[in-house]
Length: 595
Image 1: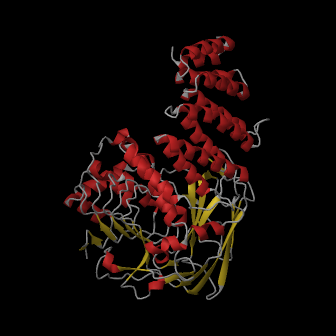
Image 2: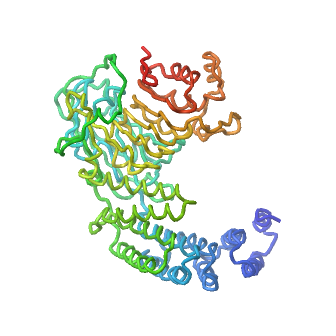
Image 3: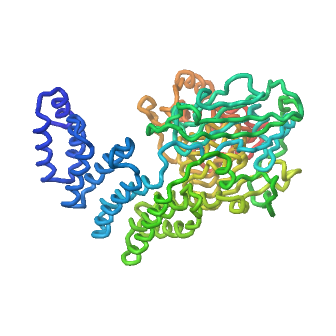
């Protein structure tokens, strides 16, 4: 009988729970690593209300008999998580408990470094050591202390950190972005208090989630300034506070408990007017000759980085000194181990430990001091373990982006302005992250200010995270490895996007499952799709509905004026005809003038 059958019998009281536990003991002595038996044991233990402390002691006995037992280590992590979360007697403070767990797992790892069971438990311990359970606000746009001056529909100047030259005129709204360290729900007018003379009612907060979830790491509200009755040349203060009342909760059940405040100022010099349609003489160019680097930084330069982002949030808690000491101690232990043996998982663990100590929100931590060593470790792992090359490549990309965005000095070499811009300081800043061999995007919390982004000539297979960049109006994704329209899903949430280059990717190179009623794509889970209406639209322009429904989902909500799709297998004449119909705002397609 399957586990589900036994569970039903037990739950109905048709068998002895004590007898079932004795039977499980016999099974697990015969095969201690049988994960089916361990899963069933958790059910039985819960049904008989056996204390987690007793089950934890049992795992220690099993591990003591044979530490090469991944199932026992895994069960131990589940039990310990429960005990730490409810601060059970003897399991608080957390630092005391973890210290003993590190000693236990060291016995396994250093006895047989080639056995992976203990290594996986050690990685879990690292996470428990450095993570902050409660959700935190780590970034926002506008930043705390930011000053914005609006001059009609021409431009929106921001002193010190950012300049909006296109976003506001496109939408008539000012996005307000809250970026948390983990996914949360419950962000609304009851949990986030916004005070300003500009407000006539509550702001509506929306999760920036690509799967239509109410649980998201990034939330946005739009301040509509199109019909505001404002006093010109008057400065309006907008104050955002959260954490003073309960309601914002993480997916793991922790409340947001650290009161935070973000205050910025908005001054409107001239009344907003609808933008006049302009005729562009040529399409946007991404050639190197069209850009020039910033020679030096001034306070008024529109560049933001992590050193300013983190300072805008009040009361960010720091990790305890004991946690930091624990991580440093582990680093020293594994340096010694790797000096004696060449161990792939040891290199990976050291890379994660160094990343953890660099990321600690501690006044004593020297952030990014270990970056070069971490990057070298991942380079070594890509060479030594090609089976997991893509994973190591992704981690390498995340570390590199964290290094680039860590300060204004580090991000400066990647900031350019258009040579043709009349006023270089007026917001024509392009963040150029091309040719960096990036396979994954990260550090988005440091890039909320970016309007023009060049990610060309990388190895991106996904653009997950870009949906948080609500100011983004120009985006270059050419010469990457994007293989489907599903990979472009985050673009649907970028309402200010006007210029998009996805040329020379791999879109259309993989076969499309046209069985639309069998969940042919993750996009099919994101919203109610009016298939009948789309079939009518497809028939009216003579295209295959089954072939083009995914790009329809991507592009129907965008207001692009320029789009480049050259070099993709999908980019034939039928696809071009489809784009012209689904994007009526389009003026340039594949560098050809549609007017």
